[in-house]
Image 1 (cartoon, one colour):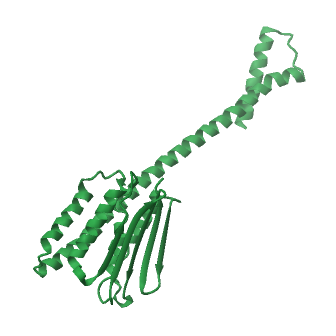
Image 2 (cartoon, rainbow, N blue to C red):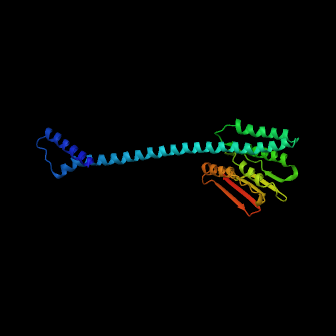
Length: 260
């Protein structure tokens, strides 16, 4: 209604000016179209243009808000990793200290290396896959110091990672889960972990046998795996595949990430 009034008022204003300059100017159908149509066309084009501009700005703001939410959620999820990991490691240290074990000192050295990785590396950037692999090795060696020959631990890490990068501390929760459930009242316990990069795809596997009667029932169980699944969905949407198989005796995880 307002737009129609603008077209009419604008048209009559033009007609007033034309007749003021030329009192004999005729108002026929042809002249009416010339007077009124440009104004209507201009308004329509202006409305469409304004709509497009508003839409672009809205989508830009939405992307910015989404990016901010993503950054905030990633920081929150990443912050959960360290306390969860430290809780498990400090429990290990307490166990060794109570036993007056000679393994306590080398275990603390390994733990300090892990803490250095967590605390002093850039927190916002992806890390080389090679550095993540070293971190994983340190963690597994720390567990080997604790369990000795009590657990059959097989580690297969291909060192040909080139210059590929990955979100830090993404693989550790799977290793933690294997050690958490693959020990204790388990007959001939084994833990197998492998890591390689092939054709720009990171392939990580972790498997362990377990005793269903010995599964942890605490409320924090599964925090690490839920965390890493959320991080994968945020960081590698449609670029990862996480397959978990559980036959009641053996638990297997296979993670594929497209690093291109």
